[in-house]
Amino acid sequence: MAFMSIPEPSFTIGIEEEYLLVDKETRDLASEPPKELLAACEAIYEGQVSPEFLRSQIEIGTEVCSTLGEARQELARLRATIAEVASAFNLAPIAASTHPFAKWTQQHHTDKERYNVLAEDLQVVARRLVICGMHVHLGIEDDELRIDLLNQAAYFIPHLLALSASSPFWQGANTGLKSYRLSVFDELPRTGLPPQFSSFSEYERTIDVMVKAGLIEDATKIWWDLRPSARFPTLEMRVIEVCPLLDDALCIAALYLCICRMLYRLRRSNQRWRSYPAFLINENRWRAQRYGVDQGLVDFGKGEIVPLDELIDELLEIIREDAEFFGCVEDVERARQIVEMGTSADRQIRTYHELTSVGMSEEDALKRVVDDIIEETLRGTEMEAPAKSSKPAASAKSKRGA
Image (spheres, rainbow, N blue to C red):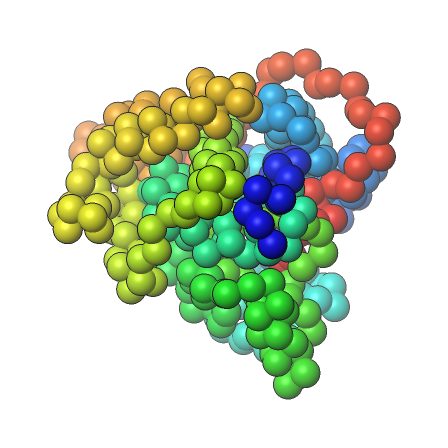
């Protein structure tokens, strides 16, 4: 197939976010939230709100959006709705990838066949999954192009992970990592960077081996950082942490969108992004997990660590044409502000140290961290909710593979 014969993908976008439900009085996780809460949310947004593996979690998914503006409106109203319904039960959602002090041993998984099977299969590895993430689906209809972009976009996983870091605490301890969630998630099988595939058929053959051997039922049990959707023609970025600030979430989604279109433009011109060994990309993945935006990533061409602000400037220049095409220049340029001001992980750590340094107990300081996350989760959701689209469209939730 000639490169020029591949039509431009639709690049529709769907975003899923997982939230933790906290008790407003104790600020601890609500390990047994009332069933009426989920039922009320599902009644308002059928197909867009669902339970997650743990009962203390809830997941939302936008409809298929044609622009970042639509995705912003969807996320804003979904966050606001979850918060409003939860408040009636004295609970609140937090959009952070770990809870600052909750104990995983006190959580219970949702009584649902899929989750019961996971709990039995993965044992303590599954029981520790008190973590949340953000998944971004991009509509890329051509099978071969989807695999080609899968192979190339993996290079940028550390950049996006670093910008999204929101999980510095685990069970009341400062882990020293900005994205501890990944340490928990990487204990699962079939996670991490995606393998390189020469074609879509090779990808299908690989999945078929796993299915025929009885190891997995289908490709939804593949939890790579980046993966082709098992149900719809989308390329799903899964490594991203859920961001308390809506603006940060949209920035990272916009960057992913523009990166994929930039890679498509390269292919259209019979070019491609330089391929690097997974060993090297994993080193940057670790640096993003450990340091967030603080210590930079390795520029493999230069063979040296480069500050993230310089790398982001280079990236923004490379994708400027694509950001202008999608009308999201302001969204992607927020990345500079994230690097300068810090991520959610940085804010959480700063609040904790500021309060304990003036004599507040560690327990109370962590509760204040939770309060800040509650507030940030709703910041930017004050906009008027748009009318529901009359055109038929599958929800992002229906496209997910986890």
